[in-house]
Image 1 (cartoon, rainbow, N blue to C red):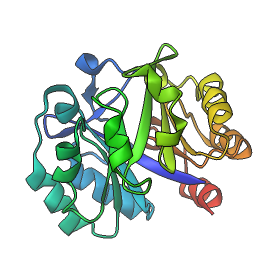
Image 2: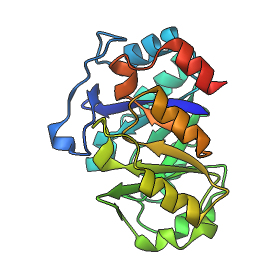
Image 3: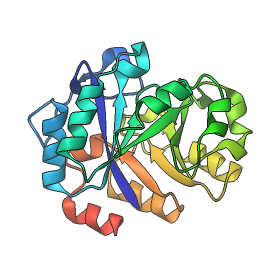
Length: 231
């Protein structure tokens, strides 16, 4: 099972996401690092455990279209071994192409910001990750996306915004729903993971991976546990 640390960026600093209420996000407080600057946070995470993938939600890009590409070019230079799953509010093909020259970035297309499903027909299934973004059980964005399984790529994030950072456990009902729609999808659970028991349960359900922030920064997952689950 793949464990992917989450970096939520706002105003150039790492914040602690809670319940999808972005106007209330506070600066990160972590047992793994004293910094709130993304380069330092990522460096400390990788020093603690050699993660192969990280997920970045660029909240300024998602909310207001403000993008600092130079920062991501710097990330590539600093951490060329990392695969960076980047949700930067991609809306159009031009937005996707904007990131194509940074080799270790895999763009995440979020249903919340995706303007036209036609974009999904233009890209190869390995060229992007789709995030199905849900709030209170409802898909954000174009609801037709749930019936156009033929447009889905290989990897699907099931994002339950209500459970992000809330320590309530993964949204099992939502995960079951998406598994029923596409049983062979490689699903990534996002939101609510509290620790080892949740991860073991997800693994038994054949969930491919999990996006995790709070459980890491609050010290609920140790290196031995991560190694056991990842291997």
